[in-house]
Image: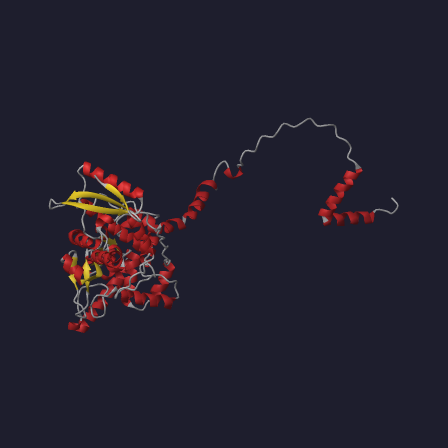
Length: 475
């Protein structure tokens, strides 16, 4: 049995248990309020009576998450996920609650932790500068999602009975509508573009709905632009990898899982490596057909690349990449981003990011195919159609007024009988009362009415004056 002891500022639940070595030990658990202590006492007694009680563990959050990453993460995460999840643990979990015991985490503690996160400065790293002063609600959502997954494993490993991160009330995350360029703006940008690799990248982003990493990881063996392919409208690219930067630690821990190639670094002491890797989801592996013009653009680009390779000889590092630097090495995202920003300013276009071209692509395709979500999803590589309806809801809504106009022209304009003459039924009139015999109107009332009309109508005054002027005097 458990008992509750009142202390100065809180209440302690005291009970005994048998540890994994068969030794009987005593445990004190503290709660701030009596009702919480009473609830925990009943919980312990219920679990003991049903033989579902779990002995206390002294393992803290930091130790537990280390086990979680080793036993769970390394089996299921790719290198990019490994880096992002371990960064969340190192930056925002261990420094705040890492020393707390796993079994001391309750829903109340979770709510306080979220409040603390909202006041925590965002962490900048050597390679990435924080874009906001404090941790954003979107990042908090990622942290709680990670901890919910981790504590689900804690329940499975019988460290705790219930997951305290279930049913968490998260702060509201406002997803900003991403600004995009119209097709006319993209034409203007392409007309002003002088950088060949940026020109190719922009066409692939817009025509093929490709992500930046997919464009930079595209290899020529996956580009099908032979004469017969173009003639039959069957030119296409096959997307099955992406360029990414990952930490050496992630690559070592995961044993090159889903990594196709690791590029040699320019500097030997860097902690990260550029890699060609499998896309983040299976749906991202896809075939996208090319417009003929884009196919011819790629053919010209390939021809110029081959000329450059022949000219540089051994100085050209041939990795068979479609978008590469002049020496053949992979082109990183920051290079394209920098050139794209310069182009935007030169062309005098609204400020958007390169990824917005993918959004513009989805917009344009939804309009051209009259909202065919499945066909658009096939090009974009989204895992779920819902992703398109959520992210691009504004696109589907912006032309809906056209539906009303088409409805008017197709249905109401030619309606027979003419529906436009129809009016709502009027209220039934009350039965008229019998009229009293009319009395001659008094001259005073006629004069009053005339005066009122004269006040309202200057034209009537002029007419009356003209008439009076022609009446003989004395009559």
